[in-house]
Length: 358
Image 1 (tube, rainbow, N blue to C red):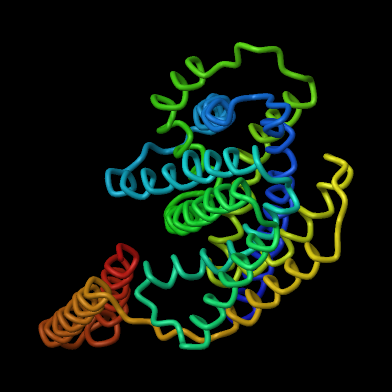
Image 2 (image 1 turned 45 degrees about the horizontal axis):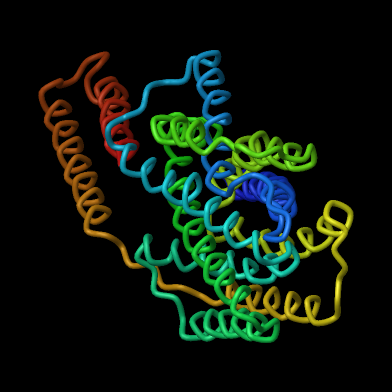
C-alpha cells in the first residue's frame, strides 16, 4: 500500500469512527429514557439488554441471508464469544443498571475513560508495553472519575459508578475483539454474527423479562433507538472505522463522545449542565488525550516470529528451485531468460500465499 493510500484509508477510518461515536453518544440518554429513574422506572434493565440484542439479532440474520455472507470459521468463534460478552451483555447491562440511579450527564463523565480502557485492552492484547506516562495518565483519569463520583456523594451514585466502570471494562474488551474480527471479515458482518450467535441467549431472556407493567411511549422510543442504532448500525460504522484506521488511532475520536452525550442529554431528557460536570468532563478528556499520545513498545508474539521464519524458509526454497531449473534448462529460446520469467512469478506467488495466510 502506498503512503497516500494509507493516509486515505486512515482518514476513512476516522470518519467512520466519528459516525459511530455520534450514534453511541446518544446511547446514554436513550438508555436513561428507556429504563427510567428509580423514582419512575420504565423498562427493566435486563429486558433492555437482551431485547435490543435480540431484535437486532433478527435484523442481522436477515442481513446475512440477503447479502450471502460467508459462514463463520472455527477460528473466529472465540473472538465472537469475547465480543458478545463485552458489547452484547456486559456493556448494555451494566450501563442500564447504572443509569437507573444516575443521570445521563453523570454517566457521560464516568464513561469518559472508555478510550483509555480501549487503549489498555488493545495494548495488553497486542503485547505492547505502554510508557510510564501512559500509566500516569490512566491513573489520573481514574482518580478524576473517582473524585467526581465522590463529589456527587451518597451511596447510590457510588454503586452506580461501579456499574458504569464495569460497563467501560466490558466495552473496552469487546471493542478490541471486534476490531480483530473486522480485520478478517467485513465490519458489518462482525456485529451481525455476534448478534446472531447471541440469539440463543438473548431471545429467551427477552421473552422472560418482557415488562408486565405499562410503559410510556418515550421509553419505547429509547428502546427502539438502542436496538436499531446503538446495537446495530452504530457498530457498522465503528468496526469499519477500527478496521480501516487502526484500533489505537481511531479510538481517539471517542474523546468527543462525553461532550456529545452531555449535549444530547439536554434536549432528550431535559437535564441541565452545571460547571462541576463540565469541569470534570474536560479534565477527563484532556487526560485521555495526553495518555493516548504516549508511545508504546510492541512486543512481537511467538506466532509472528514463526510466521516470518516460515516465509523466509519458503523464499530460500523458491530461490534454490529457480537456480536448479536455470541450470537444467540450458541455452535456447526458454533457457536462461525464459526459465527465469516462468520461475520468478511462481516463487513470488508461493511467498505471497504464505504471507497472506498469516
